[in-house]
Length: 67
Image (cartoon, rainbow, N blue to C red; front, side, top):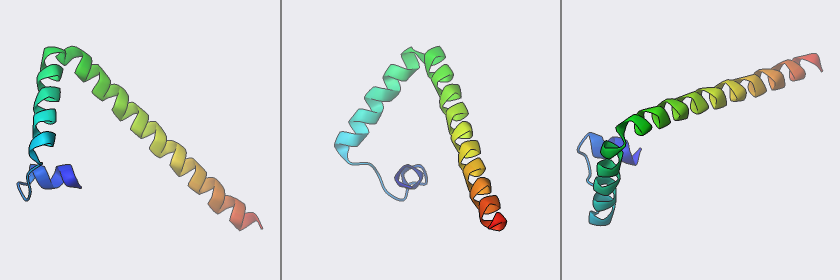
C-alpha cells in the first residue's frame, strides 16, 4: 500500500528511504539483465505460492464437505 501511495503521489518516502531507493535503482540499472531474471523468478514464486494457497483452500473446502 505504501509504495502504491508513493506511485500515485499521495505521499513521499522519507529522505532515508528515498536515498535507499535511489541507490537500489542505480544498482539495478547496472545489472539490468540480472534484475529482469530476478523479477521473472519472483513472479514465478508468487504465482506458485498463489497456486499452493488455492490448493490448500480447496482441500479444506472439500474436506469439510466430506464430513
